[in-house]
Length: 627
Image (cartoon, rainbow, N blue to C red; front, side, top):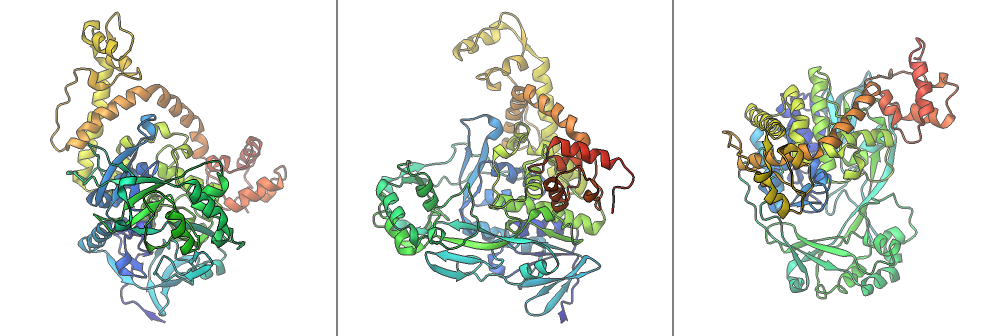
């Protein structure tokens, strides 16, 4: 077997969103890193929907950004339309989202790897070299070994990928891209457990074949905000998307031709994403719904190729086309590419630590769809954490562990390793019990301390964000100390339908009223050198939010403090659960399979009861609890 001349410390396998984040952050931290991709021209490819961010996902992009990641920057530089979602609800769940130019995003990503000097190698990894239970290298299909001390697998949908379009099956990782074979088989051979999942993508249609006058135009925000704290100038295009709707005729045709769908043809297919269903699922499972929304989105600037969001499908190509032609405005629609479902291998994430390192093999990390997730942002979030922790492994540093009250990324990792997903995992705000304090507007306040500790951001950015955080707190302090007289505010309160005040009150007390905003007071926010206009505006918004949510947040912090003791109570790696005879067989089996690292994790395993934890605590205090 030949060896590559250069030895690397970290090798990242796969150049999608997870792989790119992992490789770039590891490289940034001074660790000699190699990114291996089956196709160099596909590095950074946004293979499905042309958007970054969204509900809960926008929060994760902001978190990745504070941790030194690049998804937000690339999205800002390629934005076609920017919008904050969920603004009709409480601001804790407001979520930024950007329609992007997919071609430009990919180009920016690849140029960035060149600019920073990241080594990229084109090849197919089929196995690992493991000695003494530690990674020593990766093995390529062409029988070349690349020596390394750590490997990060971010293989997306490529592991034994199988595309379904009606009854037609295509062995591929993505449309017109070959699949990867060998990694699954190797990992299975060393005892790691895998499964199969399914996801899908809708058709791409020709812009010129659509009657746009019959769609409802959807534009972005008039005052858009960037996804990255490091973006100084953000004045994106505002290219419209258009909403169309299916009809009874559409649904009848789908139901009549369900047998042409791979998912309804009787084949034994893998589990698909519950929260991003195919059009067949929508019509079949929600038969009383007379219409479903289709959002037509451009894939790049004035692109002829249009993404039909809401029409993910594995129907045969001819039936897909006939169904779309029943929609008003799409009577003459033409395909560029049909929609399809794809099955692929994944590895049960309960086999990972909360650092995303394998519990079985030292130095082996997994990130992205290989862990059973769905979505660019979930992949990017895992990639940044895996990259940081692989570099920590090399540098002999304490790994970064994000808790559920730290970040949505912490919720994501905790859910994956404890709940052991049996369907593609997608993040929602409802998954985070501490979402009131996991806002998109305070990602810097929550995570900058980790960026400083692990040297993830440049000094200029750290200084800028530190100044913003300090100024935000100063603004909160001022609002809590400053009073206003009735004559200064009552007219405004009356106009808002609020009750007048009869004596001077602190501004913070009045701000807690739902309809009162900081702009209703004569607040002088002096501009700071080094802060752009977006950050200056965030200071006022975030100070206002902190005050409005203060009561709820303080109660949540009390809850977090109460359970903190269990989060810090370590369960030894070789703890012998078989000695605990008073545990039920089911509970014992869950503990043995998942191997929780702390008592806090043990509490959150599905089906584990408070009595199980009480019994566990008794045995943890005994001196003979390990094998």
